[in-house]
Image 1 (tube, rainbow, N blue to C red):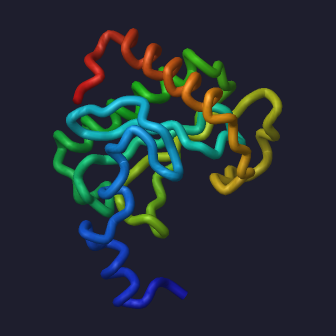
Image 2 (image 1 turned 180 degrees about the vertical axis):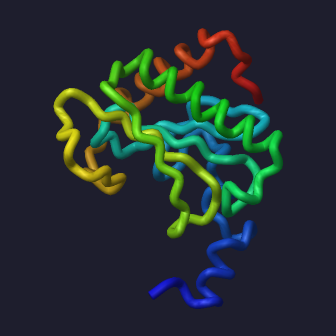
Length: 159
């Protein structure tokens, strides 16, 4: 059964939105900020069951990709692509899975879930794998390495 009308209204309310509240912070309970652009915030997840797992979170509170303007859509996917390139540079995964869901947290975001040679390619992707938490130092080292890869991609990191 889907959310009730009241539950859904609360979930899509930008005033109540957890991503609107903390996606821009250097750290939040779920992730560490890697970069910000005019369009999105790029974050590395604390749950590193797939090393290099990141999220690209749209700055504006939009619940569905179909609601984006052409400019927002282009900017969002450019940020997703650039984040994927940074992950590839730092973590050398075999493949990155890009997941846009949002039925639990209806604020447009994309999960970038690296698949490594130790992962089973026939297993369904599950963002709830783990949790496997790195030490704070290791997570911040990974965030710094991703920032460096982002910065050396030739495009400005933004605000």
